[in-house]
Length: 362
Image (cartoon, rainbow, N blue to C red):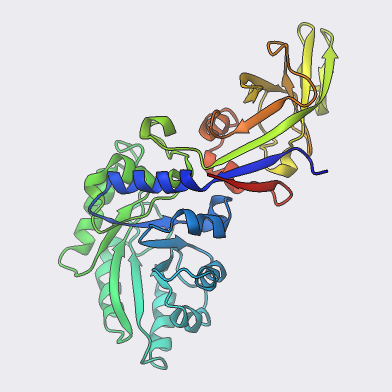
């Protein structure tokens, strides 16, 4: 018999969340971002869930090719572009679009184009408008654009940037308006589609949607900030569930778990859940991280171990071995758990371990 821990993936929730992204930016086309194995939900599942998307975006070239093999015929975009010159023939053969963010990529593209006159390439030229990760600075952007435009095999150039603080528009170090100003100045007069909005941009700044939006975490039922999933009408696509596999009566003064970091200040009933950091649950989750046991909210106690974690059952009197546990999902928002653990919902989704059984639900 398998361990009782299971992750349920809702295809209908994926479809619903895509419809929310579209509703916020009805005039824009939508790239559904499926990097990191569909944020831990599985590439094949999210391909089906996002069948209505205008395209799928990710960062892994091999997964992009896999999408073609699985039958995806609409556009595919590599958000980090290609990593070496040898990637280009494969991307051209499979009609995979890609970002260009540095001089080296342009040089590889120029060299490839001289030997591939029949290629039809679609470039997403990235501007570094203040995020300071990838892209050309605004004052270098026009020259990069003109250089790419001269490559005969390049059929289109989409101008792209990425917001650092769309969920915190007034950030004093980099206000959203300043990134927009830099982008507009750097692209003034240039022809091509524009792509600016991530999930936070889509949800909070629809006026910036332009031609394409790139929703990511919101498609899976998490939020990048600015409100809760419920506030935006999003549904959890992943529910992580398990069972109580043991119960201990712990007297006052006794410690629980590795390091004895939690000491009972009164007699407690403690349940042991079949879930640990080897399943993807955050080891650093502190005491009190929320958990639902038989639908009642309680919290963790003691250190999360590899295969188990402990929860306080003192106020869940009917709980026993076999009781249902929701670690996050439809009734316990993943962002609430992530916040308590000092991280973000993205990390919890992506950390789901291969040993956890996965089932699809509608």
